[in-house]
Image (cartoon, rainbow over all chains, first blue to last red; front, side):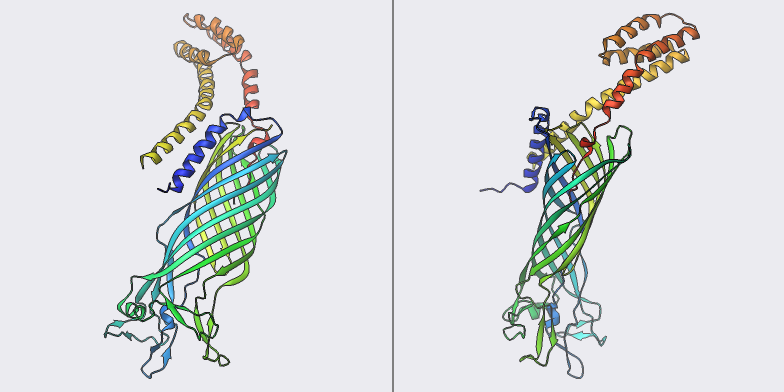
Length: 343
Length: 118
């Protein structure tokens, strides 16, 4: 069966919501009103939230005296493959008096890449298997990460209208956030040295060890990481009335987040540390499991009330989350809210 | 791809449809104010044009009656005193309504109550 693109589904959802909005006054006047808000955030992924494994650095290189050197190929210049990725979202909220209860869903898929650079501690050039030379600062490979991420938020908030009469409203609340992310990572654009190491049997540049002493070491050419970020949020909003009729609004929202991140990277080893107590003399350095996480999402938008039932908004958003690694994204945001019933 | 374009065009058309009534109200107020300004300045032809346009968009019978009475007068030469009097007569009928319209245009707090979408 042919798959319908998510963009088409969401645009159709927007149309359905707008059509229903036309019948809003006919909805039962039971004191509750409902708001449906489709939203599009064009995200520039400045930091992707993932740390690169040592990769090539797990293979020893030898200096002129024959000493083995590890971790001489750090990952640098992580950046998104495309400048902007669309993050689609839909929020449904129920309101009564000054209280709002809301749930939202957002989806984004993005690709980032980073350069694997030869950075030797001794500053000497490297001679490869076929006699080719690599100088400090040369790129020897690139790592690509394909990430799919789903955000879910639930929260309740209370509005303090006209805290400055005719000029400013304020709202504050509490909620929970859950983010699920799945990343597939692999190396590409390999230099001759990286391609040769990648072709060893078993192939791959990712070192994978189930045991911490790496006595069961194996290699893979593609690995997956799954990630859950979850915790409490404090959604806060200040809305400035830009015009006397309060049809043009300037909402500024800040939502701090406090929680945890649980990551499963399928036993990937990020680096090896010397450990005399280990039977193999090394210990695997991992970056997964559960750790404390915190962050913030901030929006500045301009909203226009087209009618009592429909409003549109546009502006900018930035989001920062720090758990195992930093995630930073920002970009323009647009959306539309349609209200049903109540009042 | 054409289906995607179709829904985008349909969405934009819907939005324009929603915007149109607001634009109409603003245009009507503009016609009233420019008509009165032309009248006071002695530009009776322009005043007649704008007030006629305003009249066509007005539904209040009292205001309609007043403007219907004034429009034939504008075809004759009028002194400054008469023009001021005519403008004041129209303003007396309209300001209360304009103010009421402005008040009713200001939405209640609930229409500005939107949850944060983090």
